[in-house]
Image (tube, rainbow, N blue to C red; front, side, top):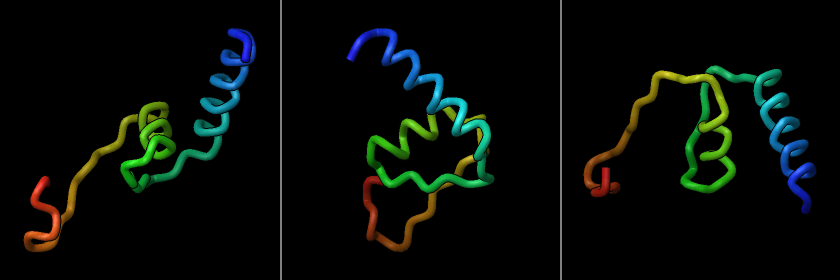
Length: 57
């Protein structure tokens, strides 16, 4: 993949995210949701956990 290809892909992804912006984004911990969160407009965020099911939170 050339540098030009990477630039085109980056532009297409940013353009698509901008045109299809949602009010919410579920972060699954995977790379795809992290990339979408990074290139989206800033959002207010919060974390939810039940009891001790997620001790790292």
